[in-house]
Image (cartoon, rainbow, N blue to C red; front, side):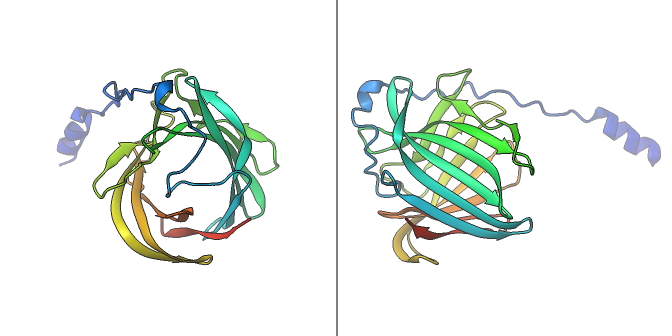
Length: 228
C-alpha cells in the first residue's frame, strides 16, 4: 500500500497557470467624453463625500473610509476620478489605496488601476502589492459597475496576471437590504472571486443613488455606517 501511494504522488502533475491572452478590452478615449461624471446609479460617489464602513473581524474592528477626491488621474489618455480607500484594523492603519475609475459614454464604470500602500504594525510601509495601472506592464482595465447590470452578467474587474485578477457576476437584482444607515430597495448583489485566492467568495450589495452598502466575505459583514 505504501508503494502505491508513493507511485501516485510521484505521477501527479502540478497545474501551471498562464496569463489570459484572450482578455483584451478595447478602450478608446473617444468613448469617455465625460469620464469623471459618475452618473451610474450604483456607483455615484460624489466629490468630497466620505463613506464609512465597519466590520467585526477576528483581528479586531475593521474601519474603512472611501473618499472621492477632487484630483484626477489620467490613464490611457482618459481622465479618471480618484477615490481614496483607507483601512484600519484594531485602530491601526493597514492599507491606503488610491483607486482610479472612469465612466464611459454608455454608463459603464471602468476600474483603471490602483496605487496601494500596505503598512506594518509599526506604521511603516510594508509593500505596494496589489498596485497596477491599465496600459502599464500588461495591466488591463475591467468593469467595476455595469451600466445596466442583469443577473448572470459576469466580467473581469481588473487584470494584471498574478497581481490583480478580480472577477464579478451579478447574482440578484431588485432586493431589499438593511444596514445601520438604513433600508434600501432595488439593490443588486454581486459575487466576486479571484484565481489568486481559490475558494474565497465575496458578495457585495449596491443600492441605487448610494453605491456599496454591504460587503460579505468569510462570514464577516462590512456595512455602511454613515456618509459624511
